[in-house]
Image (spheres, each protein chain N blue to C red):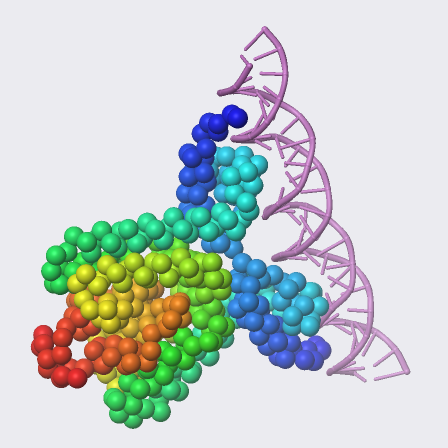
Length: 185
Length: 185
DNA sequence: ACAAGGAGCGTACGACCGTACGCTCCGAGT
DNA sequence: ACTCGGAGCGTACGGTCGTACGCTCCTTGT
């Protein structure tokens, strides 16, 4: 009944290394060996700590999506009025679509997996669910849903554009989605 | 100077097979051998017709994105008023996020590649550019840009949701983005 | 002090990969 | 009729992959 010595640290390091590698080379280019090398652990550790490649990927993306959602909730949680929430949303869009290659790439990798495999779709659903809950603190459910989609679309398009649209356009789109009928600009 | 006998057919079949395979198993699970088997061509054909895996992928996604944009332009081209355009956009969103697993998966695979490699980003940029041009026949540039992003977000979220939102929500989001200040519902 | 058992790893195996390369054989030029 | 060049393919090579499995050595209980 020996208890493992440095279990948690090892596992965490492996997951971090996996995410870094996926961000750089994609799920397609990720292998046990490369992850092990990057994490500085022996190859044997891979199959010891994780049931297989799939389990490693699932854990890695679980941690990734949790982290993203946490940032989202944190930003939105700090807002106490609808207007502050709108500003927070704009910040989020520009944060996600900024120079930050890593998060962008990982998000797409996750969506790609989710599009094909139900196990990963569960992750994205939880992500969306929590985003919407956070938005519903400031907006009605239908608006929250539309705004969540708008955030997604703006982030993706902005990240892929040659010359990213400026903040004014983001702010205007958010305003249009969230303003009530009859409110002028 | 023998002229090739059945060149074009072969190449096309290979590209089609590659797209089908990518849709099913992902770029990660795609190999020359599997594509060849599915296309019913010998393995040697792969390196003969294409300079390598990368060239095959690039051609496959070029054809895919062209096809998607064509559908987009066609739907929108048929609209002659802004209201018809709004309806066409709603149709598009529900078409893209419908049961159609194939297009959804391929789109995400392409975005994933685009997020990492400039060569593929060129494809998505051209896609976005043409979409916006099509939208600008009915809306001003800023609105077109926002609407394009909205379409993206709505399609993605709708496809990933457990119970996809109904058409009313899509229509409302489109209305909010495209209505002018002061227009009530 | 000693036994023992499990945490953790080194290594080897079989499968699959991309690609290079030499052969075949058909069509055209004479 | 005969040559010949290139389109097109079969095959084999070197490399990488995931994973199973047996060994080591530390920790704990006595």
